[in-house]
Amino acid sequence: MVAHMKTTIEIADNLLARAKDRAKARGVTLRSLIEESLAVTLDQPLPKAEVRPVIFGGKGLSREFEDASWEKIRGSIYS
Image (cartoon, rainbow, N blue to C red; front, side):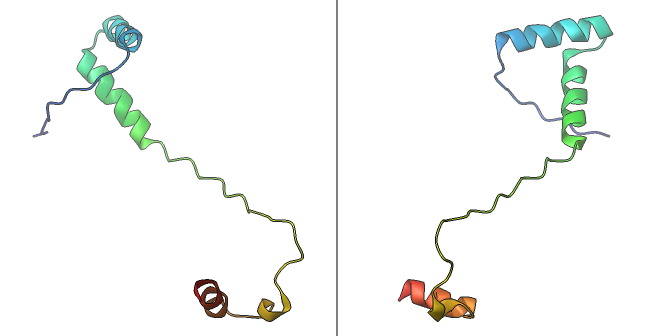
């Protein structure tokens, strides 16, 4: 047995009208069209976030920190 939860959502009027038209054209209920569309969307993998390095101009680390551990750098930041 599949459990169902009743909920209320707000969507744009034109989107609802299009969904109703599509459901009618396919001969299905609006509910089943929305459930199917949501399931298809949720089954798609999330896009991987692109990570771009942040680069600042300069000459790199000062000599004091060139071979320093992260603990030393962090300690200097918070001191």
